[in-house]
Image 1 (cartoon, rainbow, N blue to C red):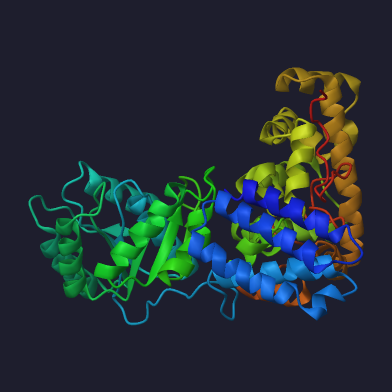
Image 2: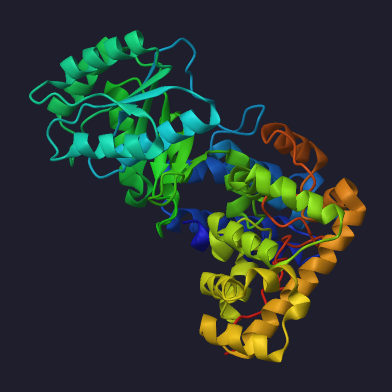
Length: 503
């Protein structure tokens, strides 16, 4: 979503950092370009004016003009101002947490029809169940949209939580009362009420939501807004907040190709914290909003902390422990490599990971230029799947005739099989080094990726310790690059994947 804005800002900063000294005119020209970039990204005009005024005041100061690295100082000022525009951050670097203290805590979901409200309800239920170990009850109050209640019931079943049984003909207020009574009797920690939406704001919908809120007394009232609608989403949030005391925002379709202005304007215009970002249709596609991390992505600095957290979330503890034991012995077979490739796909594939790395733009361009995409990973996994268990355990057995058979089974050339074997050898060599270096080797690798010791301590605490290697990323970890992928280094720090088709 922020790609176009990132490109524009990166161009501005490249011009600033390429100079030894900056004049006030240089800073003014840069501020003008940043202003245009933000307006083109559909950021609200009052927000842009405040932002530029704040940045200009600091950027033309003596500390910047006479600094040894004035360009970097301007980037830091813009970065800090972006964080403030997005709502700042609390102690753990994320937006204010959900208030779900006294059970049954009620979370009310509001928003227009088509904003992704029901899907977001399912995603939030999954997150509360798995990450906070809450017993969740879902209740649909949408009595108008065809099959809306059935949709929520199916989502509840998919994420493994309870849903309120459907009683035909009941009004939203009656459903709310029944949901609260059921939650108290059955000992639920959280009740999520999925309210009805309309294609546009109208008095009937707002009165209905107001009646429900008076009965349910929700601890959290979250507005679900479609980020692709731009400033319309901001206007919707303002009008909802005038009638309904909202406590936070959820922006959906953040993986779309919109210009990102709604996300940047939302907090400044409404004063409400953005609590979650919805990405994709899968039920695990809900990210906690962190202003610092989003600002880092916009400025092309990447988001290594989120990348490592995602790895920790996708980690299979038993498999990670088994791999750690093998690493300690310097062992790493083709079955281990296949598991790393599958892990890579679960984390969002090459494109998703490249977008979180510092120099994300260059990394993505390098992937595109080398004709690399997730098909490369799937092809490599298919090659390994064409081998016998014995061959995966002992790659040394793979002579010419066996390689020819494997290539035929996977529908590839023998040269592709050779590339996978070469990649495995590189990864196995790094595994041996990692096995000898232990945690010291891991810390050095992550330090090279720009992750501070404080960040690592936080992630380790959240993930219950990180075992013998970095969760889910294969452990090797060449400094400055992404662990576990092997191959020659691409620009931007993303190591290459052998096996890509040559143009």
